[in-house]
Image (cartoon, rainbow, N blue to C red; front, side):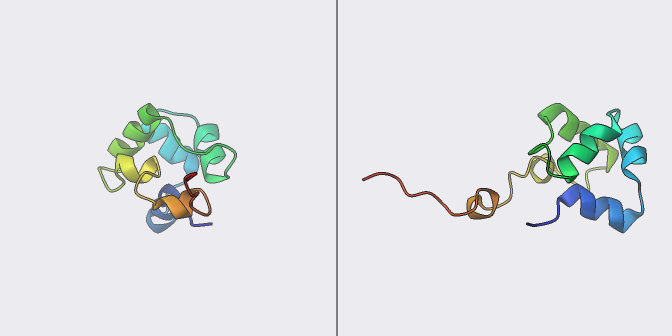
Length: 82
């Protein structure tokens, strides 16, 4: 599984999940749940706040995992019934 863009950003910038949560006005638990894979992705509202907290370094699409090719998101691509 690919590393979440926020996790890469936090590591590269030496920012803790708690500090990012404070900057974005959310809870550390929300960030931890997504990065640990317990929750699939952030809500659009939290993603927007995180994007602002990174000064746009991470886009909404990246935070919502919308720029990941379908085959990487859901495993194999499903075929449509004929």
